[in-house]
Structure formats: structure tokens, C-alpha cells
Image 1: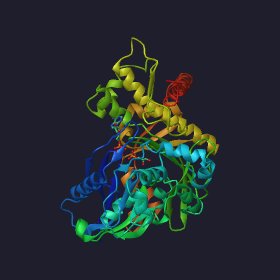
Image 2 (image 1 turned 30 degrees about the vertical axis):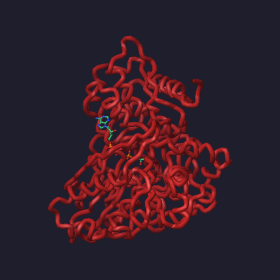
Image 3 (image 1 turned 135 degrees about the horizontal axis):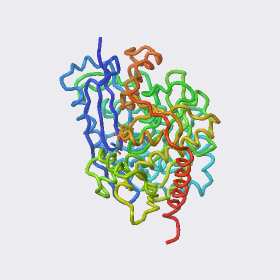
Image 4 (image 1 turned 90 degrees about the vertical axis):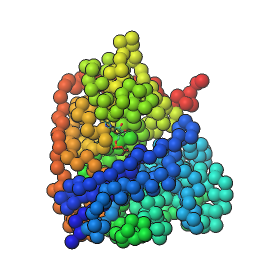
Length: 497
Ligand SMILES: Nc1ncnc2c1ncn2[C@@H]1O[C@H](COP(=O)(O)OP(=O)(O)O)[C@@H](O)[C@H]1O
Ligand SMILES: O=P(O)(O)OC[C@H](O)CO
């Protein structure tokens, strides 16, 4: 009997592959960073060949000397919304991938807004009209790449998010599929019918033939081409990284909430099998679909979270590696009145302001690098409180526990500040790679490696629980200051010059 599940986690800044055993323990792991291409301010691209090469290298690295016949299935999870278009005759991308963070298609959002489509989009897709989602990125490629529209209309071009592109590559071009969770981030999926929406496609001028078949998040929907990785292995799990993290955190019950602190931060609340629209600027999204079971989520998306620490390192140069941010922030006992709104690419939920820009406010002569580092870390927690408050207003129920994961969740000071700020228990699992674990769980369930969601619950182990301390009044005063700082960051690009 095969002993392992292989999870492929294609993230914004790096590709990872992780081999899990039946106890959900990590047997081996490999990671490779790849190039971030920044052609113009606010535009972010990846070379699909870099994505594929780095992912394939990590697959080889994680497998090492393991017999491929010992891998029961592969699960894929990925940075979502990032858009690739390729020519199915050659397999060659027609352009770099337009990354989820990119604002390059904002002008198309303005156009759709002026055509009166904003409400229709919200009602049909559960999303807000924003350049974050795939549809306007795809429209931008069709409108700006030479010959793309004609080729698309002649049926030569394929669209895919990164999950879809990886399956295409892994199957040697035999399967063009995406899963429901990734599809729900394109602004083309109708979240009630769970099909591509023809009315929206017509409004966007996107030929339906370019779009992939949509498959369940757990099921044997493809098989690797032996010529690609040396063996035919079922690809049986697939979900966008935030939905996969939610699954890996075993947020199977309505009301459970996780927050992942990676490049961005993404809080998802399981809202069960009935989709509801947020009245507080959150997104309604498919969590996962497995057979007849559809689980929806309310999501708050923060565009810049851990990336602010990368900026302290690469942009400002006040730290040399990410982990140095914690001791630097601890050189001071508080933020000294400094607030840092990292709206480098505008603000996501709940503000949705593409024209906001990064703002550090409250600086005095006494402000040090320590205060800036502290304010940068606090920004992740403040932004999370913005989301949790919106979720609580939507659900009418106070949050009891926040389950956390992602690269920045290793930061104990940040997690303590988070729990103090929310007044809510914060729980961090032993396996911080919950995204990859979620993809592994989805694949493992499909092939009988694991039997049920109940069995998976037992594999979740607590690393550390943080409980609220400190004085609520002073912490709420800080939050009020944060909200004021956010206001100052808003509408900068579109504002007076
Ligand atoms: N000790 C730390 N404190 C705060 N942030 C950190 C720390 N270590 C790593 N990070 C941040 O975590 C992020 C990486 O997390 P990860 O989950 O790997 O992201 P992604 O999947 O988006 O590539 C980076 O943005 C990095 O700056
Ligand atoms: O690659 P990550 O972990 O930053 O996740 C990116 C999100 O999927 C974007 O929606």
C-alpha cells in the first residue's frame, strides 16, 4: 500500500513540494523561490516557465529517493487569481502571468463600472469588482497582446489559474481543468449555479472555449504523464491556497475561522452550504466542493501582510532576514505613536481602495527603526481586526477562536498582539504548512488514503494557544488610531497632486 501523499504548493514568492505520511507528518520538503517581475508600479508578473521549473525542481527535491509507486496521490494548491494564457498548439504562454497583486487591469474595472456592471458582478460571483480577480487580467491580455483576441476566438488559446496550468504541464497537455475554489476567484463563476456565467462572459468578451472544465476539489480528475515525472500518479486534490489552508486547519464546521499570514493575509470563515453575500465588503467564495457537499466561505483578503517585512528587508534595509524583525520590534516597548498602513498596492478588504498607498504616520524625532518594525508587525494584526470585525458584523456572532498559520504566524510577539487586539483566543497548529496539508488531505480523501473528515480532525495538533492580556481600553484606543491612519492612506493616487 502506498505510504505518501505529495502536495504541491505554488505560492506567490516560492514553489514548495511536501511529502506527507499517513499521520500527516512531513517526511520531506523542498522549496525554491522564483523571480518577481515588476514592469511598472502596481504591476506584478511571473514567468510561467519560472513557476513550472521551480515547481518541478521541488517535486524532484521532495521525492528524493522515494519510490514513486509509494505516492498514493498528488494534491495541488496555489496562489489564486494569477492568470496565465497559453497557446494550446505549442503549450507556450502568450505573456507573463499577471499576478493577483497586479493593478494593471484597474482601467478595465473602471470601464466595467461605467457600464453599470458592478452590482451584477457582486450578485453573481460574490466578489467585488476589482483588478485582484482573474477576469480583468484576462481581458487585459486579450486586449493588449498582439493577435491574442483573434487566436482566442479561433479556439487556439487557453486560460488558466496556476492550478490549471500546473495540471496541464503535469499531464503533458492532456487535461485543462480547474477546481471550484479556484474558479470562484475568477469573477467568471456564478457561485449559485457553480458554472461559468454566460452573461458575464459576454460582457467581458471572453470566449467560453478558453475556460477550463471545473472539477471537484477532491476526486481523481487527472493523472501525471510518466514522461513528466517518471510515473503515472493520480492528481486527486486541488484548491486555492487559502481554501486549502482552511481545509488543512480542519475548519469543517460552520463558524470556524482561520487566518493565514503569508505575503498577504487571508481570513476565511466557513459559512456552510448556503452562500450569503456579505454586507460588510467581504467576499463570498467557494471553500471546497466534494461530491454533493459544497462549503462556502466569507473571506477577507489583505494584500500586504508578511510582504511588509520583506519590504523592511529589501526596500528599507533595516533587517537582513525576516526573523530579525521580531528582536528589532522588541527594542521598543510600544509603537511610539507610529502607525504603518502598508497599502503598497491599494487596500483589499474591507476597504477595496485601489488608490490607497503606503503610509507611515505619527513619526517624531524619537522614532527609531524599532518603532517602524513594530508598526509594520502591528499592521498585520490591525488589518486582521478589520476583517474579523466585518465577519462578526456579517454573522452577528462574536468570534471565539482564530486559527492561524502561514510564514508570519511563527512570530510569537505578533500572535500575542493579535490575540490582545481581538480579545479572542488564537491557536497555532504544529504543522504551519496547513496550505500544503489541506491539498494533501483533499487528495488523500479521494484515493482512500484517509477515510473521512473526522479522521482528519484527529490529525490537527496544537502548537501554542495565545490568550488575550492587557488593558482593553488602551488597545481599543490604538485600534481607533489605526482606523484614522487608514483614512489618511486612502485615495492617494486619485487624490490632489
Ligand atoms: N518571523 C517573522 N515575522 C514576521 N513575518 C515573517 C517572519 N518570517 C517570515 N515572515 C514573512 O512571512 C512571509 C512568508 O510566508 P509564506 O507563508 O511562506 O508566504 P507565501 O506562501 O505567501 O509565499 C514573508 O512575507 C515573510 O516576510
Ligand atoms: O501565495 P500566497 O500565500 O501569498 O497567497 C496568495 C493568495 O492566494 C492570493 O489570493
